[in-house]
Amino acid sequence: MNSVFSCAAILFDLDGVLVDSAACVERTWRHWAEQNGLDQSRVIAEAHGRRTIETVQRVAPHLAAPSEVVALAQSESSTTEGVFEVPGARELLAPLPLHLWAIVTSGVRAVATLRIRHTGLPMPRVLVCADDIARGKPDPEGYLTAAQRLGVTPEDCVVIEDAPAGLKAARAAGMRAIAISGTYAPAALTSADRVVTRLDNLSVVLRNTGDPMEIRVRPA
Image 1: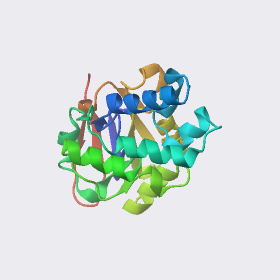
Image 2: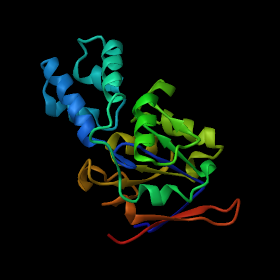
Image 3: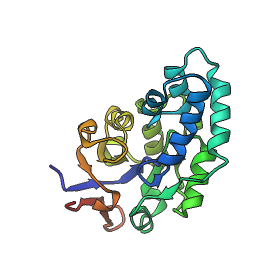
């Protein structure tokens, strides 16, 4: 099992990887599910790692998805209660030059930027959000878009994810992936090249300009 990944760029998911927003996300979806007479557990399970519009379409095809998405986005972009930095996120991102990493999130831009600013994490130069693409995870569009904007090939990217939908997207994009367990148990993340329990199990070693960097996996 790989302990060192050489790459030209790192593509991070946001929620569940760099930002712990589980309490905020679940509160929003539980309230929405209750309002619409839906099974809360199923709604939350479907929502992790997916764009809001695709979650609504899967769990409530009878509802007008665009208007539901607007209401849910307004709710999530108006609160930071239950949103925290994941331990190790700041230390991992701070030394990385902006051309070596990106964030690819299933959240809309207003929500993503609010959470990044609230936690004080660095704002990426390349931030691919739900409203930038036509197809969300597990489709590879988001990750392929990030690689293109960074000017690197997909095979030279490593994705850091916490959800099966995101891992499927990385695989479909031809990228390697490291999974962070927590949102899902390790048994649900077996498509990753490596599964770790915490983000701070990872460190990055920068080489000379033009040389690949290394993501090193420390023992838990």
